[in-house]
Amino acid sequence: MNVIEQILKKELNLSNDMCDRFLELAETKYLKKKELFVQQGKVCYNLGMIESGVLRSYIEKDTVEYIKDFYFSGSIVVSYKSFLTSEPSIGSIQALEDTHLIILSRSSYEQLLIESNEWFKFGKYISDSLLIKKCRKETSFLMDNAFERYKLLLNTYPQIEQQLSQYHIAAYLGIKPESLSRLKSLNIGQ
Image 1 (cartoon, helix red, strand yellow):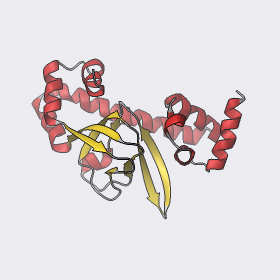
Image 2 (spheres, helix red, strand yellow; image 1 turned 90 degrees about the horizontal axis):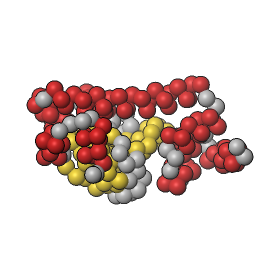
Image 3 (tube, helix red, strand yellow; image 1 turned 135 degrees about the horizontal axis):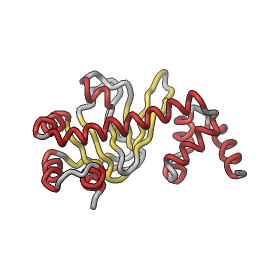
């Protein structure tokens, strides 16, 4: 069972017919490493579900990148505010490695919601998933020191150090790469 079917059937308990309907409306998209899914300042017209690969969302200001989040296999990836409001995205979403996505356009998403109230489970799953990730990170940034944020990141994404560069991890944590090296040495001792 692929990632999309896993989410639709197992997580949301949608029928085979509904899963087939989703796949009728969805498209497959492949992004090469460094290719953008969403560009800062452009409207996000699609939401994606990652079959394989890794993406990051980030905001760039004065040539400095601030990484907001990472997306791995099984994740929903979207510039959600832009997707819902048709306003330009405040950040970009970029592939950090070759990535295979199943994408659904906003018009197809809205079509599903019109067809059956059962599709609101899917909409709730998207919003709940994104909100929980956002709250977890915001709380960590307000309450935790860099080492605690690093441990939370490792617990949330156990494979992250094998898949991403120190630069990306440090940017997500809001620290310099050399500070990340010190945090790693502290973590080994625990």
